[in-house]
Length: 121
Image 1: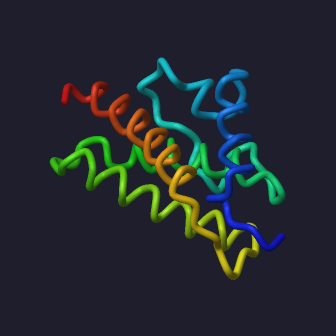
Image 2: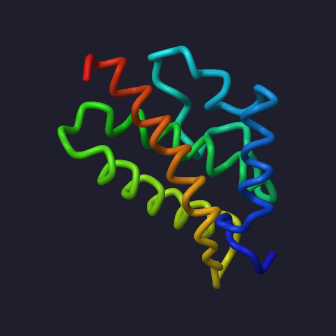
């Protein structure tokens, strides 16, 4: 698969997964419990949108107590998850799409904000 998880089709799929109520992030949206680590999520190779959502949710939980600006937190977990998911998918030459990247950042912001509220921040 030559495209990265940051393609428009991947983001469209991510939005569909979350709006449909599927995926780890949607299932845990009201919980402050720790999500399953991303490597053990229900996603499998060939489903980069689900993998990205699970990775972002897991990373947001991991950094919930860090006292860093929201933009730094979201930029960090997006970069980490995109690299991890691309490697997991075997993508060697990821593409960049500004609109998709912005939507992924919005997803990460929601996840980080959710878990920060859980610890009273």
